[in-house]
Figure 1: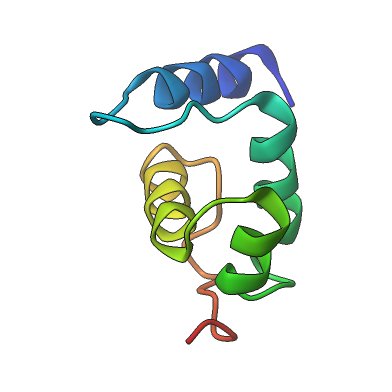
Figure 2: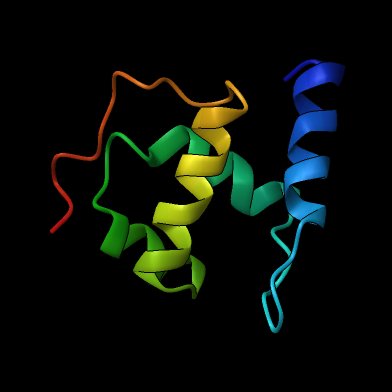
Length: 77
């Protein structure tokens, strides 16, 4: 992960909705490495987050260019 990507992740983590929990670097790395290999529900269970939180984070990371737009989580349901 280069400095620009790390800065984007930090920026994304800093944008909170009320009562939202910050994403740490390890969680973000896990998401980037597994979003196209595991279901969103399995990722949510592993990280102690909701499926909705995973979906929202993936979308934010896609918009920032940190996750490929081609790889939709076809396994999620």
